Amino acid sequence: MRQSLHAQSFSKKERLTGAKNFVRVYRKGKRIKLPGLTIISARNYLPYCRIGISASKKIGGATERNRAKRLIRELFRTNKWIFPSGYDLIFVPYRKFFHLDWNELKSNLVKAFDASNRC
Image (cartoon, rainbow, N blue to C red; front, side):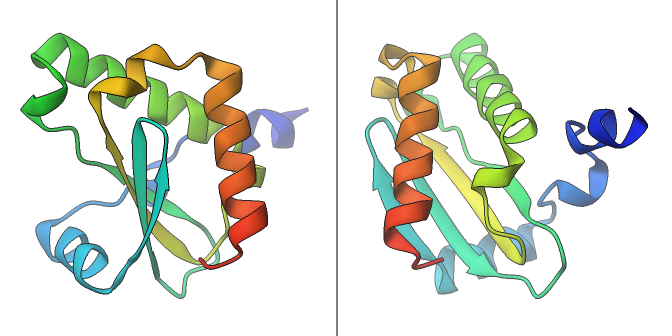
């Protein structure tokens, strides 16, 4: 039971931190456009996936940005099987992100990473 709980955690090693890492992903990464969300992915050669979130003021004030970040973290935490290991991912939400429901977001991610295989 401990392993299943651990698999649903969001540890510090899974967070993309530091300006250098963000710049590297922005420069070398491939972009996957989804409704309300863009994902930029770049190889990190680690046995796990790391995520970063770039929510600008274009999507709203502090409350909206923080809500978008919480939703993206929860989406990652509960659906790690969708995301490829060995990649850094930056999520960039747009205003339309708030008009999508949870199942629609999840199905868009599954389609993007299964169909594209370009990560």
